[in-house]
Length: 193
Image (cartoon, rainbow, N blue to C red; front, side):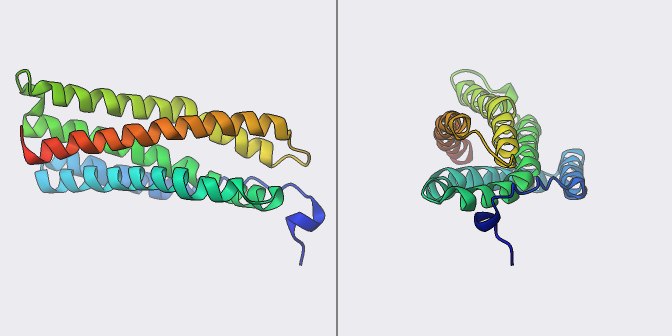
């Protein structure tokens, strides 16, 4: 039995393109919900993707992150090189589905036609989801890739990893705050204006 801790070998990055089948299936369900104009179906897709996106974000940031920080490097490396390739498919898919389904749901429910001051709630939702999506795709996703690539090297640059992880932790904290803010706004939508 060979372990990473004993051999020091860098684990292989396991990005499996076979994950694209479930990404395509999830996107197909979203498209079906949008085309159906069935409010229940579209709401279900939006809420389920949003719950998964928010829940996984918060779980990773507040549970997995602190645990990994206290693990020895070989253990952290083994977990990250197995976890991150899956997250590279999961999180962007959930983000894309949540925002897209939410837009079409808001359109179908007439929220985009509200007058002010009610429209401020719609505007808040649009700004928060835009910030979450941009931050996720432009900052967190590339940082995940860089950390994953650095961790698979035989001799990772621990100083670089430290800097990347420090930036990442700040980004995840902001993402968590924005996730809570969008929940507040969505609670307002559900209870009426």
